[in-house]
Image 1: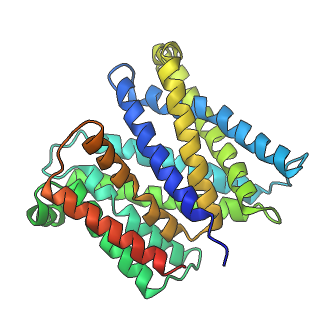
Image 2 (image 1 turned 90 degrees about the vertical axis):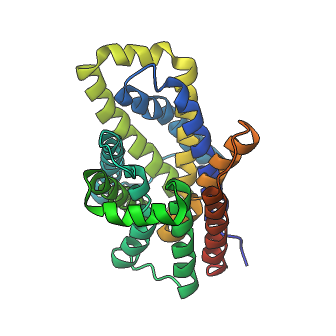
Image 3 (image 1 turned 90 degrees about the horizontal axis):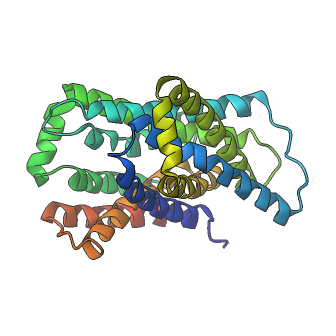
Length: 305
């Protein structure tokens, strides 16, 4: 049996995502949210182009396949949905609430599984659904302070503004995964890795164009700040493009729900970095969450192997 390529691709993506977020912390106080987000696309798109060109060179391809209108539509929808979801999460930070919007965004894990079933017809084994549920519970333990009491507050706060924006962001992030999959499926008769890299290049190109025009028109000084800090912002772009390449290749090859749940190992990387590099202690709820996420990932993967 051939080992599924989407498993190492998703694990790599989660690692580089955690790394990118750590680097991006260095520029949060130096430029606007829009400029910081643009650095991911502005410096990431050339990297995506080089990845695509490198794959074509190795594979002996001299031209791109014919790209349909449906490919372009789904790629644009993925780009726009991801950008809108990110803005909603930022918006949720403005609400004063016991539970942050990011905790509600974690419902993406469940939503993408449901959308994958309803829209893509991806049926999961009962063991996979059990794994997704266990991992989701673990994610909440890590994201919410207070353990079981925090979970009760999470449920009680579902009608709060931060919850509504967080849930909306989770839904849009889940839609992004679906659109990426549909865009890759629209690239017919080519290897799935090749299709994933084509989608990656298109999506980052759309995002660089849309976000770039906005920042140039509304925040030209921030655009200059992004260029001035290129040594850091370029790192963000390289890491973002590398992480996205892993996600897009994984989505092109595997079921979106299982790719999504495997991607939650980002939490393990982030907490591990904080514990062993920054010497930050782990709380009891974080330890519980780590074990639940790990168990959920193992259960979900066991259903597909």
